[in-house]
Length: 156
Image (cartoon, rainbow, N blue to C red; front, side, top):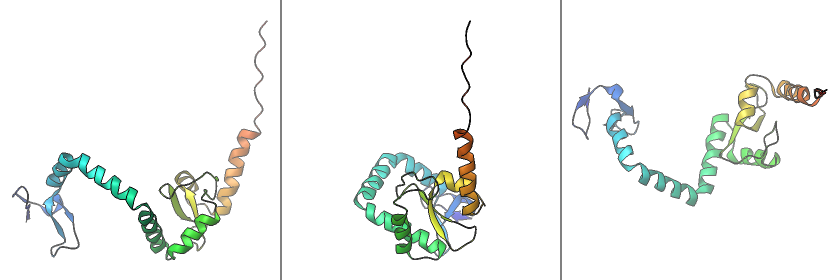
């Protein structure tokens, strides 16, 4: 049990979110109080966050690369270099990507080679290796290219 500092009620620990910066690892506000605060200040919070992102777009991108690099045990510059090498396009389908819409993934499952792809290709690839997926994509596209167009019915 923990006392919420906002509503003053004793609540179970599951009704608080975790906060590792505090001694008891539990946030001082219950989830209900947090939610009501957000709803009352939603417009101001979203506006402030949007302004911060506009001002710090480059910092956001650097943060993204660092987070991705840490996850895969790489250096952020390597990921940025890979993104430039791919001409800021998805490795598989070649559509243009922005830093917000890309995903970092293994060319081979649990392998060392990292490529940058769009969310759709990453989901569709699932656990195939990169070579298998490229072959699958070519076969899939060829189904539509090789299809004979139906001739329209002649009316008498």
